[in-house]
Amino acid sequence: MSNVPPPPTNLRGAVDLSSLVNRPPAGEAPAGESPAGALTLPSLFFEGTDANFNDFIDLSMRVPVVVDLGTERSDQWKQFTAVLDRVVAGFGGRLVLVKVDVDANAQLAQAFQAQSVPAVAALVAGRPVQLFVGALPESQISDVFEQLLQLAAQNGVTDTVTVEGGAAPDADAAAEPAPEPPLPPLHAEAYDAIERGDYDGAIRAYRTAIAQDPRDTLAVAGLAQVSLLARLSGHTADELRSAGAQAPDDVDAQLGVADLDISGGHIDDAFDRLLTLFPKLDANGKETVRTRILDYFEIVGVDDPRVGKARARLASLLY
View 1 (spheres, rainbow, N blue to C red):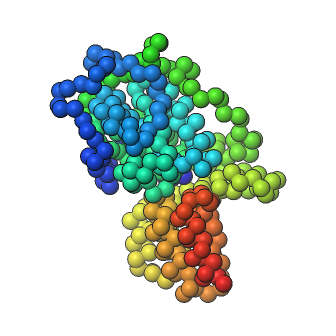
View 2: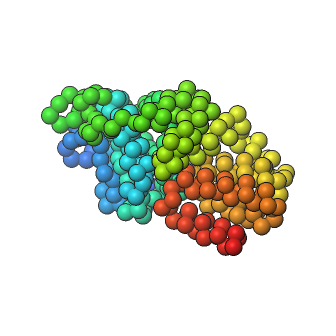
C-alpha cells in the first residue's frame, strides 16, 4: 500500500547498484542485441536474482526495467504482481518487468532498500529509480509508468521490445499469467472506490465484507490500507512531521508521523515511535496506539519479521 508515489525523476534516496554491476566497456554491446530501436527478448517478464541481475542493469540501457520486489510468503504480492503484469503488457513492449523475491535475494533487497514489500522500483540507463511502495490501483500505476517513460526518453532509453516469434506485444498477447479470478463483489466495490479517490466508500465496502465474513483476511488488510490512505489524504509530509516535532507526547501528532513512516516504507521507525510513546499514555491512549499498531501489522504483513519483533515488544508492554 502506498500514498501518491514520488515522481520517477526524484532519485533522492536511490541506492548505488555499482556493486552489482559489471558492465562491458562503453560502446561494447552485449552479444545478440538487435539493431538500435529494436530489441528482441523471449518475454517481457523475468525472474531477477542476485546472480543474474547484471543482465537487467545492462538491459536498462535500452529499455526501462520495472523491478517488482516482494516475498513469495505474501499472497498480496502474488495478486499485485498479476496487476503489474497487465499494466506492463499494456505498454506494448516499452517496458519489461523483473520480479525479485527479496527473501531469496539478500543483495538486491539491500541494494533497493526494500524495507517494505510489495515495492516497485525501476532501472533507467543503469540507474535505480524508486517508484512506490505498496499496491496501487492500476490507473495510478499506469500514470507512474508514463512518467517513467518520460524519464527514460530524457536519458535516451527508448527501444521497444519484440517478443521472440512475434511482433511488439500488446496487452492481450503479452500477458502470460493466467487471468485472475474475479474479485468478490465487495472487494471490487472497494477497489473501484479507491480508483475514484473515494476512500470512505472503500472503507464501507471492506467493513461490510468483514461483517459478512470475519475471516476475510484480504478485507481486513484492505481496510487497514485504505484507512491509512484516508488519514493521510489532504496532509503534507512537512505538516505531519512538524506537528510531531512540536508535540512529542501527543497521541494524534505521533500517530500522524507513524502513518507517514508506514506509507514511505520506514516500518521500524513507525513501530519504534509508537512503542516508545506507549508507556507514557493513559488507558485510552494506549488502546488507540495498540489498535493502530495492529492495523500496521496487517499493512506490512503478519509474516514480516519486523512485525514479529514489534508484536513481541508490544506484548511485553501490555503484560
